Amino acid sequence: MTGPDGARRPDRAVVRDALGVGIAVGLSGFAFGVTSAGSGLSVWQTCALSLLVFTGASQFALVGALAAGGNPLTAAAGAFFLGVRNAFYGLRLSQLLALPRVLRPFAAQWVIDETTAVALAQTDRRGVRIGFAVTGLTLYVLWNLTTLLGALGAEAIGDTDAWGLDAAGPAVFLALLAPMLKSGTERTVAGCAVLLGLGLLPVLPAGVPVLVAALAAPAVLWAQGMRRGGDGAARERRLPGDAVDPQGGQGPHAQAAEAHDDEDGDQR
Amino acid sequence: MNTWIAIGATAIGCYVVKLAGLLVPAGVLERPVVRRLAALLPVALLAALTAQQTFADGHTLVLDARAAGLAAAAVAVVLRAPFLLVVAAAVVVTAGVRALGG
Picture 1 (tube, chains in turn red, cyan):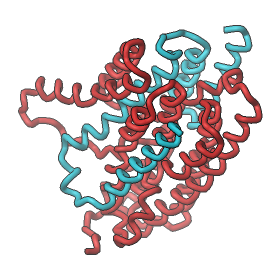
Picture 2 (cartoon, each protein chain N blue to C red; picture 1 turned 180 degrees about the vertical axis):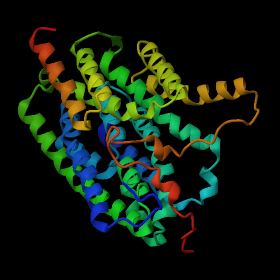
Picture 3 (cartoon, each protein chain N blue to C red; picture 1 turned 60 degrees about the vertical axis):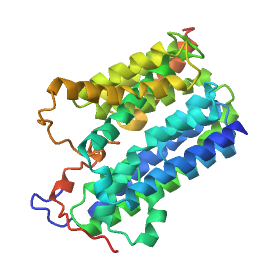
Picture 4 (cartoon, one colour; picture 1 turned 180 degrees about the horizontal axis):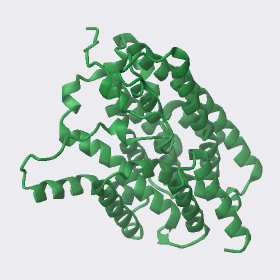
């Protein structure tokens, strides 16, 4: 995919990668539109989510929590915590993109799993910028179009559950989760979170069990720290951006970022 | 109205964290423990959400057609099927099991 010596990739190859990811994932906005409308949100509300939130897992989480009767702020909190990973993508991207400060508020909306994966797979700044922009634009346009079509379609067919569409949400989460389960730590966290999420469901208000389940992450980290006895031997972990492969193992990988020179292009 | 409040809060919160990553100096978020936590947080949330949306019916746990759909999605994930195919597998199998009276 990239030259062994980090040789510059032709623009055409970057655009092709970006379009591949942007189109494949952009089309799944359809699943979101259907799920959201099937959960009782209006077409306007559904489209507002895709336009303004534009980070898939958070959108699915929010409509799921609202459908379960969750308090709006509890539902938003779950969606927000899922979106926190984007801050770490932005951190990495800001070094590679080296955008002028005035452009950053505009680029921010596109800082998500897929744009990060494509951008990090490029070998030079021009490639990173093209990869980010083309993936972001393709995905934004398609995701919003297919959201609208999905929401209209769901309204047209009425009972979405009869069509099995209530299984789309959890399937999306599973597809996002699977590539993250790389080591025992991730699996332990996931297992604890499942137990907490299901075990607390009967006793806590809707939406709250998921937030409590999120505590599995710091709890497992803390338990590991205790076990290691603070010998400082913790291996350097990869960036969170590397943990996400939106193409289920087929998309561009992030190793190329290692080859990237770490010159600080900040324009102050 | 409640729905719009939730949408507004989510939109603002998610945009602010995206922008924060682009604006804050690298040192603030680069501490290993913060990075590890940020990588593990989605794992915990996605696992809990997957389980709940498969087995929850309000405040009770149920085993219905969705479980069969999720099993199909899991098989698709193991076979490294593309994202859309994973979702389609879950939807088709869930609908099929329901049609058969599951």
